[in-house]
Image 1: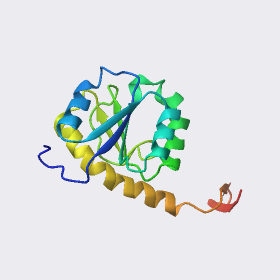
Image 2: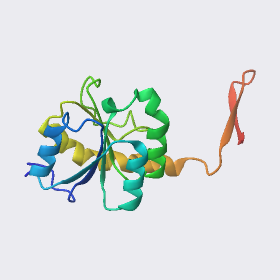
Image 3: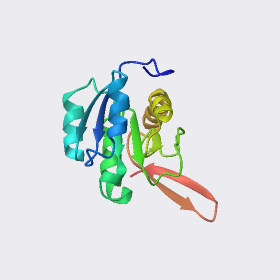
Length: 162
């Protein structure tokens, strides 16, 4: 069992086209009685999340898809459509594990691959906390789109409905 994580049973979904690269991650989750299913593309991920409200952690292997820039729209749509699902981003390109909220638009926690057992455990604890901040952020947005007009002469911004 995990030494610290004692949250709700982790029911994870992993978006990855690489079945063997993340075997260690799968093994750690399964050894700790966490369920994990794998899908290979964003449409399949969306369908699975819509069909199973019990999935409580989304993991996305950014390296197995196109570039992050190419995935931006799909990630943004996922974050809005399934805002209640803590999302953990995985990539070899991350310099370090990041448990803060600076990538909030795309995910709740970022882990460097290969994923360390301890980092995964912390991520399972921190992702739901960061996800609450994400949902508060979404709730604070204006109900309708606004346009921002900058008045250079006065040095002020005016917010008007778009």
